[in-house]
Structure formats: structure tokens, C-alpha cells
Image 1 (cartoon, helix red, strand yellow):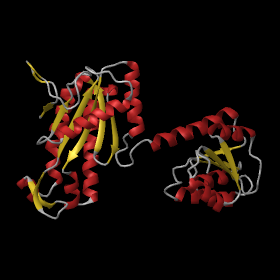
Image 2 (cartoon, rainbow, N blue to C red):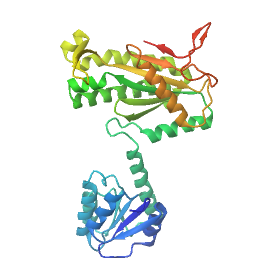
Image 3 (tube, rainbow, N blue to C red):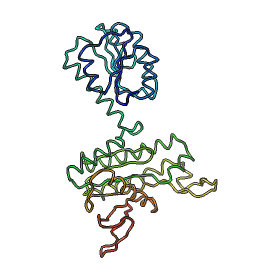
Image 4 (cartoon, rainbow, N blue to C red):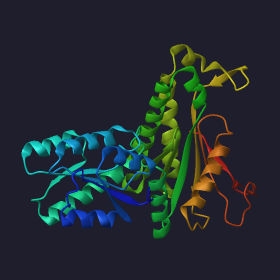
Length: 332
């Protein structure tokens, strides 16, 4: 499969309308015309195309079968699918029932046709960059947000939040319970960040129990303190009454040895551009990961802020009259 391709599925080898053909050509380096559903699936599974357009004007049954197969597979189901349908209303309805993301007709005005197709791709791209469980933006959108702030030369903080003792919780309870905890943390982060920072706050989900939120530096203390406080208030109720009252449970480590596992806490590593100069998002992410790792070595739910400057070597603590400049940890 060509890396950047689009597919036109035309079982009867009909020539597509010029506007549709030109639109497909703008979306990919090459447009492949395919006539058989098995070939469509083989090519799509080999490498997901940017978009698949189905011509159902003269052979609708074959097209609907092909579209259903494309959408039924978990790998190819995310590919945007548009069906060019006949003018009859039942053809329009059946095209959507087969799983199409958009249905267009030849009689559409050019402007409406292109607007519908472009909107379909925007919806598809938006759905692909959010985490399916939390509906929060993923790594690509996190990087874009940080790059935008760097370009605007505004003061901001990248905050990396991670759960402590989450694996042990999953092992004792269930994947379902663990997923609920992740959704709870996502809700806390979103509500606190948006509640305090409004549109200046961003919350993303890297995956698992790892989250990133980006906020103006002036809101670090209020935001992180509120997140830690709300998390510590809610999380005990995700345990059984026995474990909650004890404040721990006995779990096995990788060697099979029993040990006390405390209730989950949240660790937040914070990096700002107040004292540092960053040129790209990867630099910020690397330091935020370092600070998160440091925060996880501290007991309880904490946030730890990097106070170093560009001239300070990594891992060096410098003592000043006001106390250590790296790192600074806070516990609500």
C-alpha cells in the first residue's frame, strides 16, 4: 500500500464525477481504483488509506457490502468512508445504514459537495486524536498545544500527572474498576483546569494513567493543590470498605511476595518556561517526565515544580536563602 493513498471503490468501473475525483486527488499522493471487496480489504489492511470513496450509483448492493466490511474491522473502521449514491431517498438511507460517514449525490452543488467532504475529514481527524475512554486529546494535540504556546512566547507550565499504585489496584480489583479510576482522574483534571484557567487551560491523555495538562504559570499552585485535594477526597471510595478503613491492602509484588499496598495517590511533575528557554515541545515533555518521576518518589499525593535554570545541570540541587531551587514539592 502506498503510504499516503486514497481509494475509489467502483465495482462497475464507472467514472466518478470530476469534482469527486479531483477532491480525492488532493487528499493523497495516489488514488487507487478498486473493483472487488476482497481487494479493498487487502489493500486497506496493508496500510490504512486516507479516505475511501464508494460509487454506489449503479451497483449499490456490492458497495454496501464493501462499506460494511470496511467499517466492521477495528483497524479499517476508522477510515473515513463516503458513498456516492443515486438520487432516490431509499438509496440515500441505505448508504448511511451501511456505515458510511458521509453520503453525497451527483446533483449536489459543487460548493456543498466539497464542504461535506472536507467536514467529514475534519470529524474523522478529530475523533482519531482523542482517547476513546476519556475523550481527551492525545499526544499529537498535546505537542501542538505546547508548540503553540512556545510560538506565542507566553509563560506556561506543563504538568504531568500519574497515578501511584495503580497497577496493584488493577490486580486486586479489575480492569473495569481501573478504567473507572482513570475516567475519574480525567474528570478531575478537566473540571479543575477548565474551572480555574478557562480556555487558557489544556488537558490531554497520553494513555493509561498518564495525563498532561498545560496551564498559565500563575495558576500552578491553585490548580495542582485543588487536583490533589479532590483526588484524595474521592479515590478512597473506589476501594472496598475494608481496604478503605485500613488504608491499604496486601498485594503481591513481581516476585510473589506479599506487601502492604497503600491507597492510590497522584503525582504531578511540573515544568515551566519561567527560568528556561525551550525551542520545541519535546524538551518540555522530557523535563516534565523527569519531574513526574521525582514526584513519584515522594509519599502521598504531591506536585513537584522544577525550579532549575538553563545553567543548572540536571539532578543538581542548589540551596539558596529561600530554600532548594530543585525540586520543590508541595502536598495539599
